[in-house]
Amino acid sequence: MADILDTFKIEWPSFIAQCVILLVVFAVLNKFAFGPITQLLLERRQRIEEAEANFEKSKANLANAEGQARGVVDAANTHAARMIKEAQDAAAATAEKKRQEAIAEATSIIAKGREATVIERDQAFATLKRDFGRLVIETTGKVTGKVLSPDDHARINQEAVTQISR
Image (cartoon, rainbow, N blue to C red; front, side):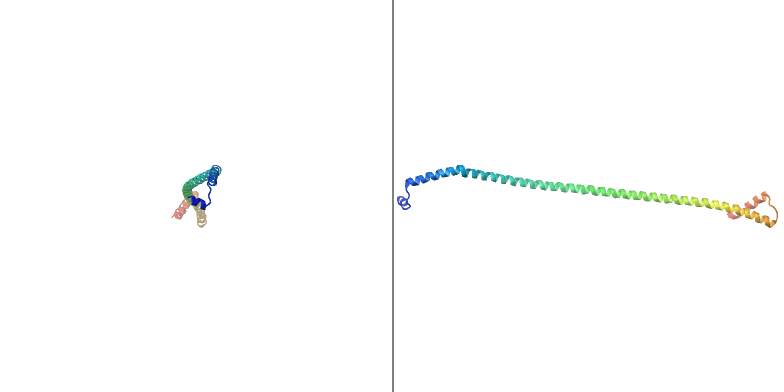
């Protein structure tokens, strides 16, 4: 071993002094450099792990929120479809009601028209009977050359009305 120490020119006092200096430098670096750096690295690792955990939580919350949003949208679509269907049904019912009212009003107008026609026809027929009877009486009076009595007027009117009615 002495040969090795002589070959490398190692002197024990200087070697021991260098070892002591190395241990002092290591202790100082360990206390003031490696310790804080190691602590900083540990803190950084913890923050990274917390950030990853928060990211996973956020991802799960986002997926949950998307699911809830889909549920709300589906419910809104269902509600909107139901409201549209109800509005269409109400519109159809209103249209049918209006159609029925129009039919009823048209029927009423037709019935009133028929009644008016019957009344006008009856009035025209009564006027015709009166005028026809008067013409028959005048013609009979002129043909016979005599003045007709009220009884003759009534009898001739009655005969004329009977013949017109047939």
